[in-house]
Image (cartoon, rainbow, N blue to C red; front, side, top):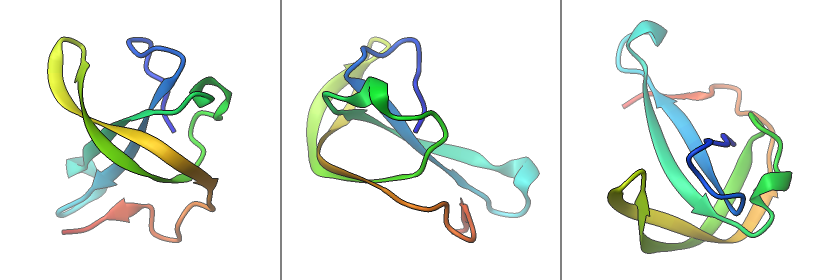
Length: 84
């Protein structure tokens, strides 16, 4: 969970880092999530988010937004990075 100042209180971001070689070359994959109680979620907590993609706008650019239907706290995975 990441709370970006550019988002409204009912939105947050979920992020994962993709590493192709080493942590120094990591890139973040981010999705904006709409959830009425987004402001109550703790920054840097891990969540499983289920929902429906909908058209949206972030920082003036069109992008899909995940309209969450269910959010479940989960433990950080043993390997937090994704490797392609």
